[in-house]
View 1: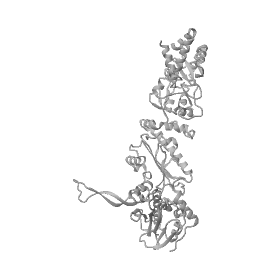
View 2: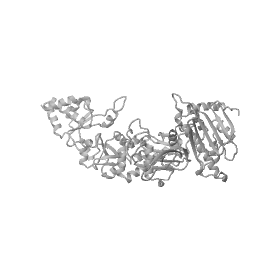
View 3: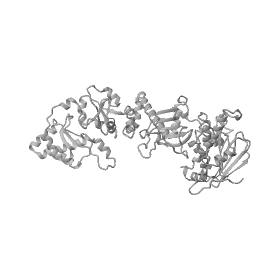
View 4: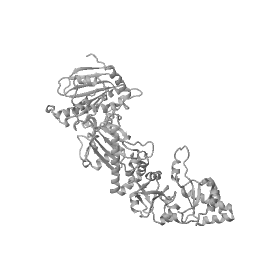
Length: 625
């Protein structure tokens, strides 16, 4: 038969197909298997109304075979097949999708789960093959046909013999080059791994010659002997865990699946299942790892859930399904309603994805709230791993919309309980007279607990939240309040304690003026402290940037360095300050020495760097003479 030419538009598209559309050549096997699955779906659907089909769902299969000598891979199915016109229309015109047309005609049916919609997946095989032969026989038609093409130069359609209904796609692989080793696809294990990666959940058995360990004929219970034999076996799982009801799956099955998915041998801490039917139908299976991945805080860590459409993997890590602050979650999402692009590798429209992502976020947060309520010890372990990420969810983009949910999941170390506490628990313990929720920031709970500023609140038995995360202060400032109580730093600004604020103090104006003149630009002001009890001095930042913010922003390249104001607060009832005041009357240089030492001590207590450590040690040595 004379060779027919692809239409001009089809020739250009085929050339584009081979060279540009697909990111990875290995995707060809996924596409051919998906087409085979679609063909079986069509015959399955027909069998619902045509008793003559004579086949049940369990009779259908897809088979992969390899001929290394001929350099061919054959994918066979016993689906509906094609007649001459369908070969012409489906394979002679690129982007003419018989599956898409069939889906439109069948309407919405649970028994129809067609994957192919664009009519281009078949031609992805030309990325690895220089010739493709399709031998097919349609159900209800006696004559079989052979379609053959070597690429853009055209194709032929001829009559042939074929006993059974179905289609065989025979791909003759290109010769190897220095850059491309096409022969690797002739290896059974390579094909096996591609099926497991992309097509493991195709709902029909995918068979292939596989090495299997079996007992030998002379093997006995006392002397077991084994040998490796090759036999055709089903290599795909077919029904994924996320398509099964939660009650039908054991924790061990979930743990095994998670281990393979995340390459983590520890059991997951949480298992979250989702099944939604409506304008967008999807199922999801998600896990919270019990341990933080070693590279979690690095740029190498990739977030995202595996994305499937009708059991075929579309993306290994779809980062659009999770906000950044939930990037520790692992799992899969499967939806038949996704708008896929021509290569089935990316999404053509992201509206569906945004809806799914928003719902998954709510589901995860609801599960964490339940976790916190039902298993406090377990939740505290989770929070030790990922609590910082929840905090970032408050301060990051979109935090305003989610902060009401996230604030209930946050925990901080309590000065009175000596353990982690939630904001709700703190608020429930507050005396009615307490106006604010107090907090202090530092590197550790022990370091914060030793701060001079904590003394007054400890005397009043007021609870203080100790913030040890680098972004904790940003989180509370973003929240602003909880249960109508504003957050108040015990280090910066006033404490809003009526008795302390109303206490009449001698402002020691002359002494404060002297200290300010002595220290100059190193401080913004010097004042008598209302919060110190047994310590002589402390450093506060007033309003604006806090000291913890200053330390945090030192890790970034800033146009101008962030620096908090330094206000030196002095306890005029402390012997050291009283000694400075006495020295001011008799020995001004000694009083200046005292002022500088108190300033440096206040810096040290606040965890701030000394302006000149050597000068400070010299001053201490001078005092010891």
